[in-house]
Image (tube, rainbow, N blue to C red):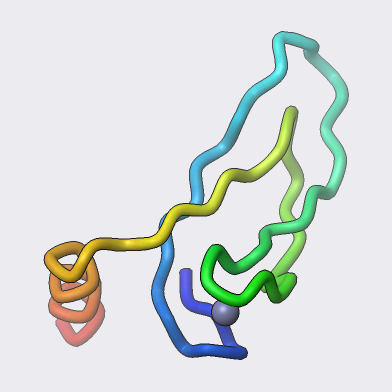
Length: 65
Ligand SMILES: [Zn+2]
């Protein structure tokens, strides 16, 4: 995923709560600038992580394919 504010790629992982049937829209915030990038349905919430330089390189390489 990419932030439209600062144009940096980041990783999103889901933190699942052990409660079924509580699917709600949770915000995904940019780990760099805090901008709310999107909302996605989750059982818990979304964790966002900055990418290392190596991961960023890999991200753009896969993207251009
Ligand atoms: Zn951002």
